[in-house]
Length: 93
Image (cartoon, rainbow, N blue to C red; front, side, top):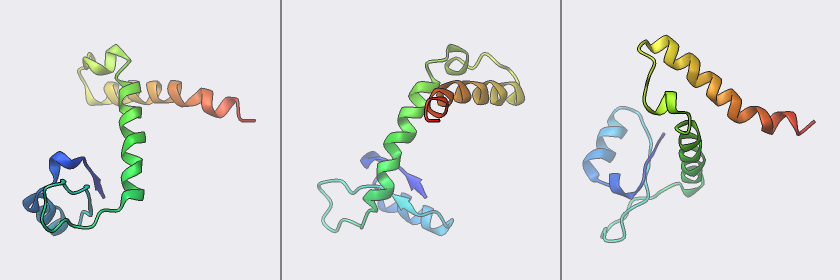
């Protein structure tokens, strides 16, 4: 699935995604004559994904891409994600 906003609503993009086996979850623009169907339950996950990206970008090292290698960047990305998610799991027990 590809979750995108209304800015990516176009017939060409939808057809290209379907050719590659990717299901587009894009709400139609208001001015479309024949709007395609959209799975709004799946589209709700887009908000959670965007909020997580915004939290991760609060770490300056990730936002400015200080790490030169892919390995060190992905390692710090994992550390930042763990730091964000850990408080949610610790207090539930």
